[in-house]
Length: 392
Ligand SMILES: Cc1cc2nc3c(=O)[nH]c(=O)nc-3n(C[C@H](O)[C@H](O)[C@H](O)COP(=O)(O)OP(=O)(O)OC[C@H]3O[C@@H](n4cnc5c(N)ncnc54)[C@H](O)[C@@H]3O)c2cc1C
Image (cartoon, rainbow, N blue to C red):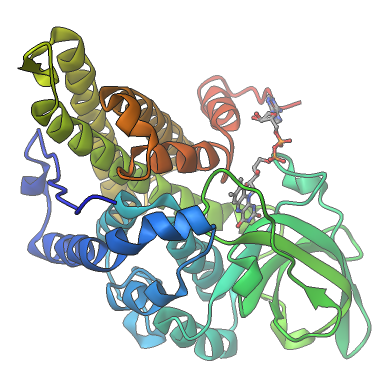
């Protein structure tokens, strides 16, 4: 892969809206991605291997639990800082950002929000330092967009619970030390359980042959009469709202992260278009290429504004799930379109691993599907503005 010459676009001087702390956190993540992610990520994606060597660095830049209080090992930052970290990591690769998102919003967040004090103390500091890696099991083979239909279940056996079922498409599952798993009790109520590697009957086979998120490990979670100690049930929230609360936090991070992927594609295409000469001129001098580049920076700027405002609302505790859906949907769609246009600016070179664009484009095909598909988020907006759910 070519040397990482990334220069972040900031067309509307959005830096002026950030605090010194935001900029410091963002710049540290940006430097780390340039130094430790860019040189290895193309090979990791080509080999379809999650690069475990970056776990320590992710912890050091505060990517594991950025907004979890420091007393539990988190970075104690606000939501905009969290968003900026996700943006910078996804500028490097959506798969790496997925690992950080899952660890922060889908594993640490539910333990922090719904867990007991003992669970917080036992798991959060190790997750923040990367000593423990986690995964989040909601999706099942027959229940993706409709997780309420899940069949994974647990029964009360007196001194423990007995867990049975299977989860599919689980990021980090092949190497996770713990899994936050959503399952129904005997009354059909959804609860979160912490399942630990090594528990008898628990296995995590890897899913192969992905053309997308190749640097992120994806797999199954299989529960065959797994005995779960009672103290591993998350006691403070149940029902579908519990996993959906985690998804709000993760989708917020994705709304920022996707901007990072788009910024990288735009920046690469802009630089290439000034260097590549055809018909005796740089291709940047042709109106059709300028149209592509001008539309890219316009859409990136709009997405940046949306994410920043959503961050302010999240910091004030006012952001609704529907507002988060809108930003996730818009920004991922924007990034995918930017990646496709940027790929064309590079002509044939755009399909090679010498540049990051094709990898971003393929990654974003997962990002537009996971954590609620593009269509499901549109239905959420539709329901929010009309008051009528159109899901079934
Ligand atoms: C790489 C990757 C990593 C993932 N990581 C995780 C993870 O860590 N944990 C986890 O729990 N899950 C994870 N997922 C799963 C992901 O969240 C689901 O794939 C997603 O929710 C969609 O479910 P599905 O794939 O079963 O699609 P389906 O629900 O089968 O949907 C198929 C199509 O039908 C459409 N559709 C469905 N219902 C409706 C409706 N009512 N109206 C209109 N259209 C509809 C959808 O929009 C979609 O286009 C991951 C997925 C991928 C690809």
